[in-house]
Image (tube, rainbow, N blue to C red; front, top):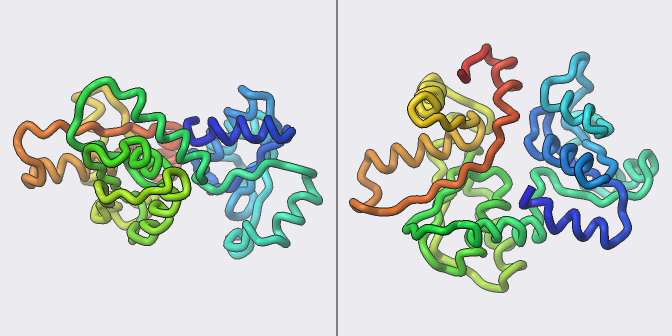
Length: 264
């Protein structure tokens, strides 16, 4: 919701009553926008990658139940989702709307996520977060103003590709460049939404021992990577590390439907 806070304010100030956004069929962002629409009295439209589902998965069922209209684009057409032609076609179908990007990351999202730092009431040497589109990480970096160190754990294979995007988002918001951060790219387990038995075991053990559920797409990979780095001596003794749990728990039910009740 932090990503959407200032976008919702801007949408309201500009007189929009409809939000439109993009995502895959299991998208946390689609889920969140549908919930925000219901809570803050916006109509919502979700442009979904892929063909229509004969039976909606838990994410899309939730979105539809919250009043979101679902519009499907083939995977080929989805690659051009931001094209002028596609936006024009969407406006013909649905009228005027306030557009949120896939994953919710834009400059207003960075502003919202920067406020995470204001809520932390204890000192730390490092702060870590999972990375999808990079908006949350960019906000954390911006909010720190160069203090402490930041580690992002990419949930995507080849996550270095969005380094420049993160730098640009930070600069657009703060007009500054920071060097106190980096992205770990070795803990994606094969790519977005990919997993292994080792990751699943870690997630289930973590919940059993700490009573904290982790999703297998983002937070599970981030904490697995963090624990590995601790075990391998990456941090000095007595280093204080704060890990941001970015949620995503709604995706567990869909993951279990796809892969067979792996997350307990």
